[in-house]
Image (cartoon, rainbow, N blue to C red; front, side, top):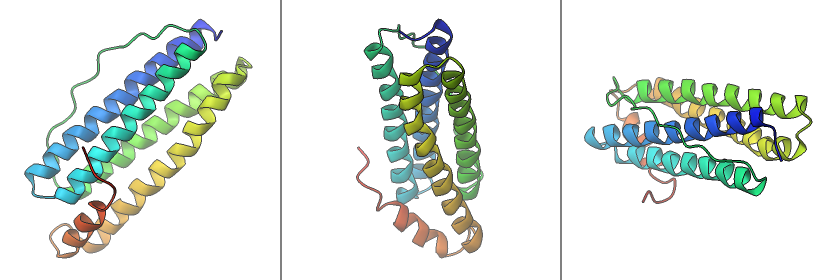
Length: 165
């Protein structure tokens, strides 16, 4: 069984992952309202990923006999200045999640909680990908500018990322 401190920290991470999902759903909604269907689809895929992340920790807590305590999720923003702002917020949020994962990983190492450490290693790797992807999209938006035809191309490319349901 994991420590109460780790249990509490992992429950807080579930909340953060669900907050993340809600943020991405709000961004998807905003992008839909701006007729950016590719951006909207990409964000809805992010929503699904974040929910899967929360579920992964939820399942782990049950597997190790720890209690799951679901906290209230935060109301996300609903307006952004444009696609660049959306991805600046996305990158900053992913950096916040990365910092949280790193703290959890350090806690697991300190407590010699090997099952949590192994489970969290997946998240450490996942966050490298999340930040790299957000950075790449943000840099592309900056290169083409929000008011150019290039934003249409980026929207089309983002829409190729699997079906959002």
